[in-house]
Length: 285
Image 1 (cartoon, one colour):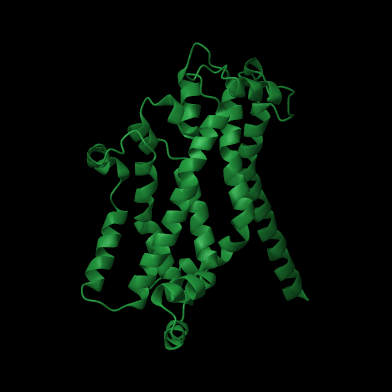
Image 2 (cartoon, one colour; image 1 turned 180 degrees about the horizontal axis):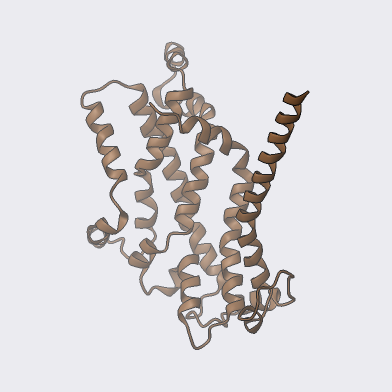
């Protein structure tokens, strides 16, 4: 009986900790929404916990370009972000899974060296290679376009590493061998057999890839520059914050809320895969 009471007490204690941590995670989003419904003067005062009545006015200001961001409204910025993020997410997840599959399945010369090279690339920050990256974009006539923001997503060493770890833990080589015996091509095996088996890992990495691409401010700023009609949502919000003369905190928070919204929708659709994906993907070799 004492053991049962102790286990029940531990369960209640753990549940309370989880609820508290969930509250800490969600409270900033709640404050973000609250501030998006307030006037600029109200935000600069004390913290409000009750929604205001100014959300649609703030949204109207963003839609009509009252924020003075060179005639670019929030819908155009969101469209630009989706044009970059959706294909970049697909390319990153698919080609990372394909690369991990090749490293996991095949034995070839310099396999360890290739895997070591992937490890090394993981440690190189984007800022170090940005000068060469811009030079390549100019040489290929893709500077000031979205192409340099999309195509390089195919080479994502961190995603490759996670995918390979997941395959090491869950993908049986016997299944691949059986598909080959049945006459399935290598790409057919990967697309029709392997992908369904690694859906949790792909869904998890799709969320991370989507968030990373959607929130990326540094690279689009370097590539798009002053092309205001092409700026993404992070660039748009940064433009709102940078304009001191017409700065409206209500509109800024409304823009931030709209920036977070697609991420929350993406998470809602793919969240059921996260636990399984992270649990197996985190297994060490």
